[in-house]
Length: 76
Image (tube, rainbow, N blue to C red; front, top):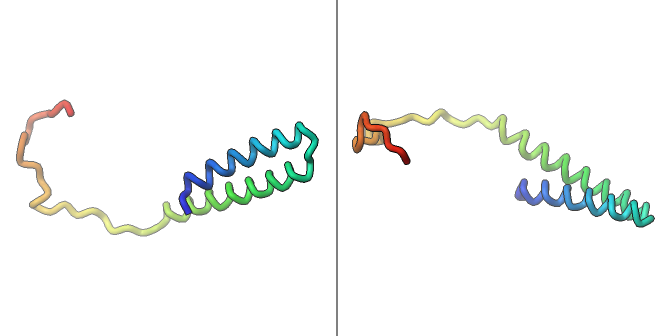
């Protein structure tokens, strides 16, 4: 699942839970908060486990060097 979707959904459900609690729909607001917290936890753990994946270091070969403009600073 896309982490951006989980984060945005948790924010939207939290805001809708606040609106529902001010309008007096306490049951729906609690359900909305529970779903928002579960989305937030799932989003947090999905990003956390990606940080600890082992990836091999990038090895730069002799063909990867940029010969054009060697020693010249390019503005962009």
